[in-house]
Length: 445
Image (cartoon, rainbow, N blue to C red; front, top):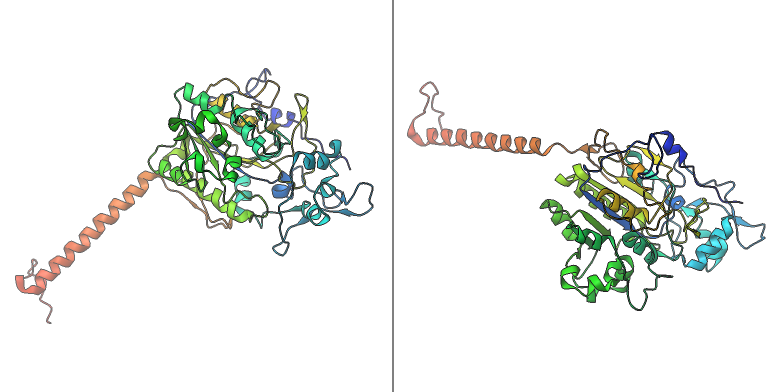
């Protein structure tokens, strides 16, 4: 079975949206001034098909034709299947060798064979759907879902997280940091040079790079950048996730935020629902803040985690990309309910930041630097925030304007004051001070 090709970016161009700098005449251009905050929430280890492969109308999973041989040439194969609560999860391998064998020179038929054993290989063909991930599917329904967003590197989670902040893997292979640490220009140094603020929020962070856990340095590679980790001033930009909620409440959200979950990253065998709840808490807090009206939050994943995906990764600048991963743009200016077919990868994250804040592009020329921009329309009527239960039930409530809340609060205080005054008046009357209104008779005790 040959892998399915990516959907053509011409589909988005036909709608009038093309990447900035494409050079195409008649392209719709937008001012990005309404967006003052970009938040990158990067979870870990899931392919696009593993989360959204059964969503209608996409490059989706086909349980009939997408059967993967147990070993090369075998007549026995494993079809994609829904992962139920009775299926025990295990940590799949997603090393560079596993990903290469899974892609199998573009044929996309090596996923089962690439894993350590047949049990893991069979598991790699599993998927979750809207009943398992109601909140994520509701986000996809309301905002912009990218169905051709790829991990930029086949070298694992760390390499792609480095790409997200610097545009290139920086020599990282198979989650191993070079002995000299991560060097080179990052979006953070770019922001510093322009006087713009940034923070990297890390779940379960103790407060010092020197005390970070090994898993945290992979999921938050900023901790392996000597220019940041070895400087007290720069290291102060790396904080715990609790600070994110504080910054929102104080109207102190920086221009660019990265958020890394280390306890609830979603990487198997973790329960995906825990990570979903973590992300929901981040987005709900944003929607209830003043920053919502001028923010764009990107939810995506560092790599596929060894899970099956049906689409052959394209070759960019002579290198084949990693597998597709989920990516959802959540913003008042995201294109509502839109499935964006534009080619994008992890390098499109610094590309988005650099474009919105008018910084030099970090990602190499030829990479899809502007692949996320087609998901934005700053000329549209902004999408209202909706705070709802993770079950996705219709009980979601539109958050009222802050002014309305204040008016209701003041009204409640006035009503309470009036009730107290009336009660005091009746108390004095009963105590023998005489009724203030002579027409009101005394009530016998």
